[in-house]
Image (cartoon, rainbow, N blue to C red):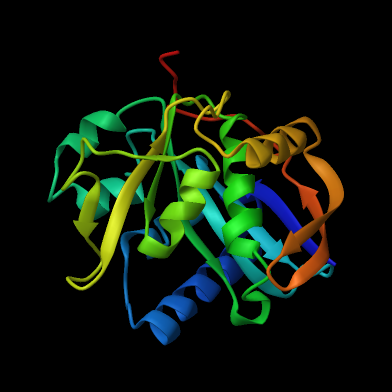
Length: 236
């Protein structure tokens, strides 16, 4: 069985290291990218960093993950560092009441199961409802833009060239997306919204997920222990 759990980064340094190394290895081997802003390790000891990790039942094998970073004026969001030099408006947008889902990846072993395109994207939006935020950001590669739209993100055309940037290399296009209604998710696909609401109401559950390669069991624990955030406030 695959397990998906969320935790504050300082609460599980060993899992953070597995997550970080897996993400870095994927970027270097399969995409030829040595460093991106979400690849920094500064978040590992930061209280406002939430990790979503996909593991086996023994918690020794990591199949993927994502990170949710809250804007707190201490640790910049990866999207700020990535596109700030191209469009400084991002600094005002994420000043308060913001978070970003970033560093989303899955290993070759689970490719095609829907871990990244379904499980992690959905889990990130589930966690957003537990946080004191007004807007939720993501910087997407072209292949993941449609995934973002499905779970409620829209392209932020106020940034860059109608939301797009050349990042992390000149031959790569990244799209800035945002959710401005993390509770209602009016722009989400209706079926996805229903699945997200179900996970929000039952943060700990086991359910059958259906991906391109068939069905598989997932044990979710999206209840974050020690859920207190420092230097974070929402304007809503």
